[in-house]
Image (cartoon, rainbow, N blue to C red; front, side, top):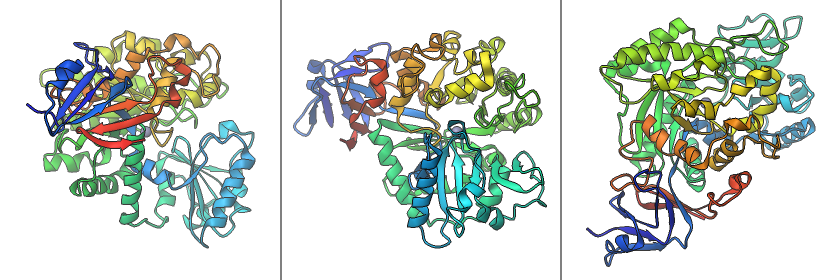
Length: 533
Ligand SMILES: [Zn+2]
């Protein structure tokens, strides 16, 4: 059989244990026809075969980011980027510049700020003098807290008389006036409902640009988290792109727990869709975040004896959800950051997994983040086949904060090694736009346990480091297993999708601290070139 395309003279790392390394591969009709030696693959070439000489460069399976908020990635590309800005004066300069560019009354949106980097408490008045006429709403890096100006508070009707909606917090001065910080979704929703909508044509253009970014970074698949507020528009517009033949990235799309009943009534099951766009898990939230100190903790945060975090979905409600999901055939994906949230989610999912043992769901249950786990819970994910979906790149920005708010408990924060040694499948990702989408930053962080300045010098709890093959598994085969696509993706194996990337650098030869700067020369999806540098 003649190949459409062959690649020879590569250093191909397949992630397939039956043949970890090869020099050549052949594709036909979007699938891998052969993976092996140049000699074997050249035999499949015919007059119409496109032949690419990889010139000895490293070839990997296309990478998967197993935790992305894709519509928000697309939106954030357009907003004021405050990510990693440690100088508060620079924050004010960036906002002032955006105000100058904006039309009167136009909303100024930004994201990525982290008050842990400043000696200033963000409050509305610090934006009011910059933008007295314009609404300003700035999402914290974890997206669970917004910092808004007085104009926004007025538009949204948030004042001293308004009491907090359930499961959220409007931060206030002692006299009850809101100070401009809004925590968790029900508070943010007060603002979002007064924000002007963006045209669909514009959002489609943003999605196309974000897809190009993903391919430039070596991604060929993502697991889209789709919290409820972005769900409908996101899935509709992805279908529009797909209908127009423009979807080259693969999307495993989660369903917000709020909409489980609707999916169930229609008889929709996980995996519904096709090779580019399919439905995945039912997504729920057990707690908040570490940075906002709303993660649900077994013991209080260091120095805050009355704060053990926030429960977003109680264990009882989660159990009810897991049962309704199982009845509809869906596995769960649950956000859990603090050690109490992680324990409660394992309690529910393990009990559910035991009930499901006779008729397993098409995809395993998953816990998102697992940022802190108690020692006694370490073996329990593997015991029940629960996947840990973790984001190594977060430790670069979080390790200082984790040490401060969790103290010595942080030795089991981002406990990659301990979890892996128990047999836990680790599906890795970025949580973009909470962190940059670039998977090579995450690979570097998993290998070094250091931030972008090389701190701490010996690595943060370096005993938790992963090896490069373990990490690559987390960006390839593990997410494929998690998506029920192990027979189609995750490794360069004949018969699977012809999704692969060619790198400019050989990350097996680089010092780990330099892997984050890796650049992708070419990205192929379905055997087609979708990005070239
Ligand atoms: Zn997320």
